Image: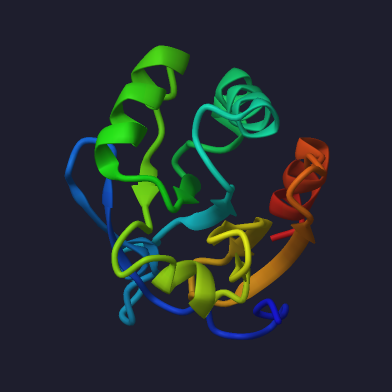
Length: 159
């Protein structure tokens, strides 16, 4: 079962497509308020180089200022290796972090309740997490069903 709205977002530490460590907690507002933090659009997708996934990630690329700016950070997570994600990101011109939930296989996807044990990959889950680390909006679609980016924009505007 996926993490619900109002729940604290499970923290994680994953490597991106360039081998850099990315922690969800790095985007949280500091307790003293000196660092305002960023809202996070956390997007899980099954696999790089597949039709629906490529379409979704390229649509995000084409609307990037809505999802990567001074207030918001997009993080896309799959169970692919960092090497696969590096080639995929370069081929598609994706300039936002592609995070590898490869090992332990699907640990972060499982923490968010979006890992399909039979298929061995994440389903299409999206979580909008506010600057305090609380899930404020979510949608989970099956493997073949693309998500509507306009819904992300509306959810971010409501924060």
